[in-house]
Image 1 (cartoon, rainbow, N blue to C red):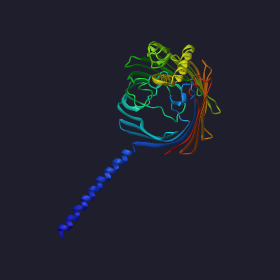
Image 2: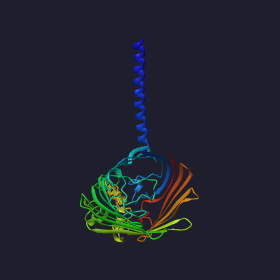
Image 3: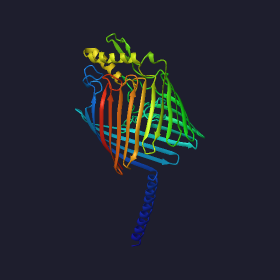
Image 4: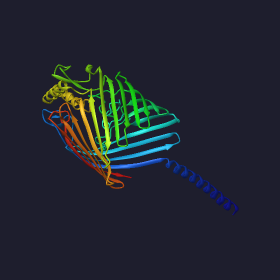
Length: 431
């Protein structure tokens, strides 16, 4: 009997010890989870697109761009942030399911952000991973940024694809100094044949943050000796008025341009990334915004695109397109498709040199509605683009939205050479 009592007591003590250990583990887990912030967006959408597929256009019979007249999808976008002591992690996995016209369902998984940051001391941190590196001040395009020229704000429902970076940041007073290197292409597009080779680009960034102004500059060099000097700044002139500039000087940038003759002598023209780029180009913009007392904010930007085409080069560009679209037999067919693909993806978000960007918008109108109306105009060929983004927060965790884009101009103008118009309707459920 004594042995049985002793055994029961031993088992009770062991069970109590296990319970205490389990309680400690649960407590540690709960303490760890307090350091984690997370959310999930579920984004179903449908999209209707009208585009050029004429026999003498940049996309004959849709064989180059492979666009869909109609498509739909569901994107699942978790966002996880973890902070504990000197370590921070930012994780944004993406699961995108698309239904494409004539192709059925396609599913893609990747990380929009997978970033680790370690604070070595009050003034110094290191970071690395896959993410978007934001540099510059412009609303739409940042010439100062050697890694991401476009801001992605034209349609913020479609995310820019990230690259892989490492960086070291040092802070001294109002100054930040960073060494940045893009070590891998990550999910970024336009790398690999027939477009551009990925090159590591190493940059030194200096930024000053004042009470009402910010200025910055970045000097970078790529493995293929492409040089970039970017500079930007902004200043609050009043509570309602903000002004900014953003620019860069580039040597030997990546861009395709048309030239007479073909390296194979089989075609009259060729889109090349060649010796014409081995000179200095200046691109820059000036911008201002004003917030009216009754709510809306008006933005205006003038953009000079030194890497863009002048009239002669743009005429040659269109001749290259017509020639390529009509050359549709044997080996010339493949060479023509190569030319047309590069004409559709030149590496230049805007093909010409002089642009006006304008926007008027307001957030939380009636506490539920946000809108942005945009009009872009090319001074060089008088083509233009109108776009709108409307967001309606129907409940605390549900947003309905629409994105509309319409390109206006001659058949082969810079805005209207491929995409004519597009309407995207969707919702975002947040939890």
